Length: 330
Image (cartoon, rainbow, N blue to C red; front, side):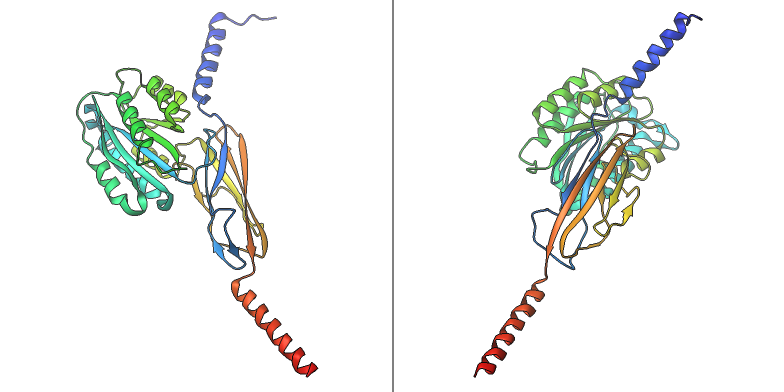
């Protein structure tokens, strides 16, 4: 029997360790329906657009999203790559993310960090303040050092403070191109302990992959390495990949129609096309798959009753029947 050279064994163990590190942030696949409520009152013939969320961080539930964008504003973000500064990369991609999110159920905060951190925009409902959020994104400059932990701490304060929407998932997206001072992974652990559900990280060219991976691992999130502006924008708006580790979501409509790979945004949100409810139980099923092939499913059941006009016609019919019977007796 041939012996395996020691250096081959060492390479195998190293490769195994790297794979384990890169996949360790995929905690568990989760998919849930955020609306409409299964306890609501619905009528046959009514048109609805059920919506939900899928992620690979095991987050279940949540009627909406409170999102903190934690964005690097250090001096190195002024470096030019592919004709634009990394700061411009950040602004374009973050704007694409905001524009792709569901406005009715999402609030966004913008935090920038360099040597210290600042909350440029507190949690703001996109339904009324998307322009203010985008304005804050475009106000980010490029100067100073890199203290990712300070940005995470400021985001934690905002997500768990007075502006938090009760029942909403609390999430961060941390973007950086550099090497951080301190130990930001420990700040991520504190954030989770304070109630934050997930911290996803995105590394731009020049970033410290080890640090960004550790932040995501400590923060129950997903780490993504991005090397191009197009890739970053596609990641943020969900047109090619996403920030939450989901490969695709399949949906079965209430009429049995199967939709393969329904569109999701950068944070795993999806919205169904128009669905006309029929009398009785209307069952919608979503199955989400992560990038490792694991899956989870969820059902939404909306029970529809006859339209009010149907009750009115029935009442009128009974009234006429009673009148006819009385005439017959008379």
